[in-house]
Length: 198
Image (cartoon, rainbow, N blue to C red; front, top):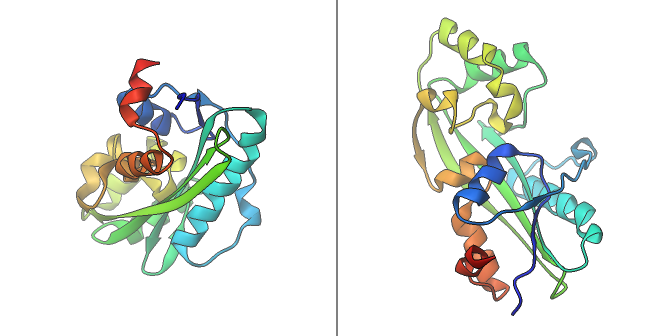
């Protein structure tokens, strides 16, 4: 089967870097989908629904391509959190997160325009956060990094200092589960190593 172009329906530099790290050079086409119109209280369903809408928004722009849409949220004590709106919200969030744990959910929607097939799945990783002083919280938020990420932290950045351990898929915390993507591609009949030849 011919290997189609791989399209990332996301503006996330972290997701793009993840794909590049494993030999997939994606076409980046952010969806600009308005996430605020979707309200679901179950985190796995929320991220799958948002991922699908993002992929579906971009898919018609490509005749023959694989389009991946992703969305991540952090769930702590039953509350769902996305990107904090501002510095004060990020500080308040970290006051809850520090010394606690949360479940990071990422939805993955893979549309194969070549075969007219769509797969939607989610992955969850448990993240344990360090005990932090007020000074450390404010200093971390001042870097601006928490404002760019679902869950207000980046495990591949400054935030890695404050993650004690994770249970589950590491790349899922960055925004795209590479093992899950491999399974989804295999389900559609592709071998990930074929993308390395392009």
